[in-house]
Image 1 (cartoon, rainbow, N blue to C red):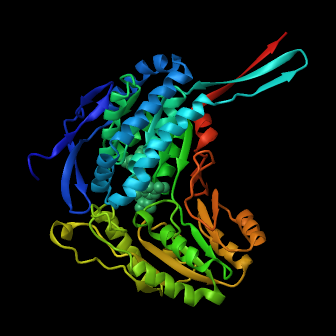
Image 2: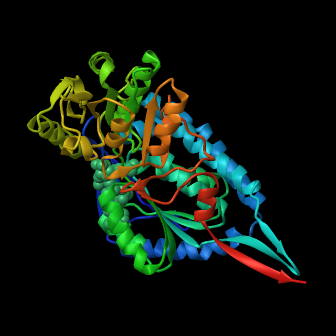
Image 3: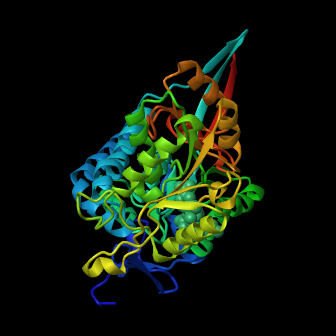
Length: 483
Ligand code: TXE
């Protein structure tokens, strides 16, 4: 490691602070395997300092008018926008995703999150319920200090999805980004400071999940915990938060079905199913990693699908032509490769990909993997039901609507699904029968920030987005006034 590697300390109460332990963690760039930064390895002491800073700053922030807070959020959005290219390059370097994706999706959505929740709090309407001789006024107050724990797949995008509504509602925040992708969170704090967010309203603590993350979820002064990450970790977060009666939002894993009927728009469906399977290297909780295809078109569709997947350019994330970048870490690639070996043991055939591409120079040390399509697996096997969270799609035939629904629902997860058909009645029937939180028909990941986002079953608890986020990050109080 070179001596010039940047050290990224915590950001507490408007100051840059190393961890109390003095320890640092390496942050590895997945495209090269080289250390690109070192982050503070925080523990309960650092979390406590951040929570105390947040507690001290929160009342004055909450006392501002909604309009005043919204103006600060708008300035954060402006600041992110001014740095769009720089942030996209940073996210790509830290996460491994194609810079084109970061520039077109991750960073613009982070900007949109701040603009949207600035508008949402400005336009918030609260109910009143008149009754004979009295009126009920429903009011919302901030929860206090909110703990945000976020993952490595869409680092800035998912952090801002929680931070913007939390701040809009007058809370103070302590955020713990993934130790694998900490850098854009640090840049966000720079932007917030320039935008005039008062010191202590947003604090950042870096470190490992079982150390810094666990301490944040346990802290008695953290009144709400919003977590996005894996289901196993989510279960632990829930077990920690529930006996302490914290507000809790969990966005967890998925094993989402892409359901293709024989009357679909062929080209649009192929495009959509490829994007659903492999966007962000398959590292999105919403990715359609189980492709269910009606038997009458199954073989023809899978052949065309595998050909398109094989043509995706895997390579340098910094190259604008790259469609598939590096997986987030070497350990994660090992996990995905383990699933590909399991797929073969379970009787599957790898139709394309699954190999390490031969890339030049420093990229030879990166955690790249060619996107894989696997057919011939029983739908209930482990490969077809467990979350792989990488560039692997399994394909399965079905005969009719009933069987498609049974296959789609036959997993422990229930996050999302996409349905591809020209038959409107069928689209409605299938969408209603799917046991998931979100269904797309003839599209995938078309997002409107006003709509509820979240899953059922092992995919989580609660909803984010629009008024659901505003409700989560506030306490609702009813005041009944008699006259
Ligand atoms: O995520 P973790 P990991 C899935 C995906 C992936 C698997 C494991 O299948 O392969 O989860 O990934 C913090 N208390 N998803 O281990 O552990 C951690 O530091 C508090 C799906 O990388 O869930 C990080 O900030 N926090 C997913 C965050 O939790 C803890 C996105 C998420 O890490 C903690 C990511 C603890 N005890 C992975 N332990 C999605 N739904 O989008 C860890 N953390």
